[in-house]
Amino acid sequence: MYPDTPSVSQLSHVISQAVAPAFLLGALAAFISVLISRLNRIIDRTIVLNGIPDDDSAKSRLKADIPRLLRRAAMMNRAIFWAVISSIMIAALVIVAFVSALLQIQHERGVALLFMVALGALTTALVDFAREVRIALSEFDHHA
Image 1: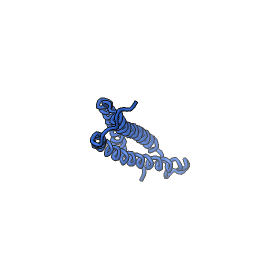
Image 2: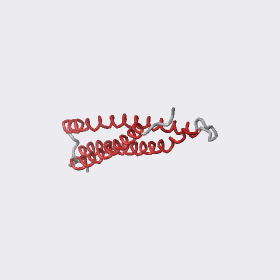
Image 3: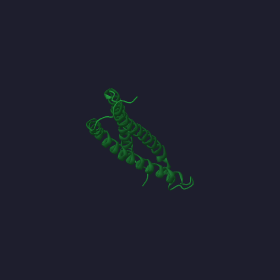
Image 4: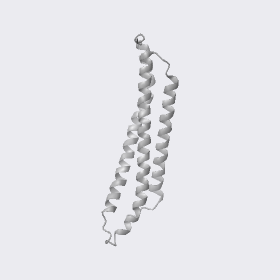
């Protein structure tokens, strides 16, 4: 049997606590969009380089950039994965907060754990993103 329906003040309290994770979820969506855009540019560049015939001596030297592009694509793929995991954890956090308010059960530890996992995944995504940017800026780009 369900406990009594939560009061408006209880729901208002849960909604006010869910605002910060909701903003974080919006920021994560924008971050994932940036990551996907960078990955698309890396893939497009790789496709162009793979399309250069081997007998084209003037442009075949540009293919030396492909291994670097593949490393960058792998880092972007990992960053997207961890950013999506972080987003899922934030969404789960909001769901747990509302369900626990509806059922009138303690949720502080579960929400704190989900938030820590989400921030850990976000940190991992940011590290992979920073590594990719560093490779993109520090190693000489062979196209010219």
